[in-house]
Image (cartoon, rainbow, N blue to C red):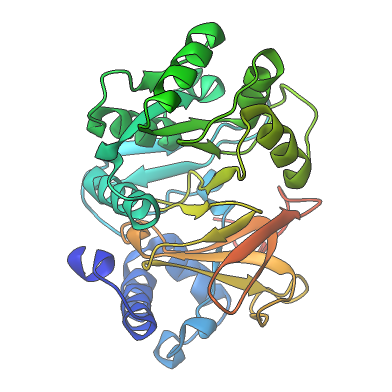
Length: 325
């Protein structure tokens, strides 16, 4: 499977064709996924539509090495995890696929990253190794043509002054940050920004009380003086991201698709508008597994967008427990 056939998708029929090709490839070449399908008694020959594809529970990235390639591993991305919990590990055999995915994914919604000054406020992610978000942000900063792009961590005063200065100069600015750090910034400074995209990546990381998205965005909108708060939806186990330009409604690049599964029957896909577990097809995961059943709850809409409505109550133990290898 050539990457050009993944990142050049422009129609739903192309997506379905590529997804089925990757499914049959991974059903043969990903040992963990193959065993999972066998335990479900899935005859892969009979899988002819994407709605028939079983999705691998995301927790297997914590307990198994998910690979569909025999090439050497170039990068291992690790989830943040908490004390006493296993971290998810995503073994990446071709880091250039990830770089192409996040670059083209961002450009699909926002235009060339080179046209932005990128200010990254991601302190919790810099405190550990193996963050796929830090890898992406670093590449964005390097691709930016503005020398002021960079990570701004503890010196919020410097960041506030720079943000106001850049915004007045009519430049395109991307401020990407973890939720608690953005809240710290607006609690100490007030802004009225016109040319800045404020993008939260979610998560209080134990630093603050968790807020529902609507409450968080209301606080940030008032603090930054903007109409909308943008969001990035990504995870260690994926090589692509979804983006929201406001109101918590996310859209995906052409090589990614969201399906909603029944919470009582993981193999049943629900229609648009119904709430259930979020399944993600990420074709850029060609060398691991492209079909992931996440621990998030959500719903999709007819135009392909989706909302994230929460998480399963017992997310660490939920899902299919067929495999003990």
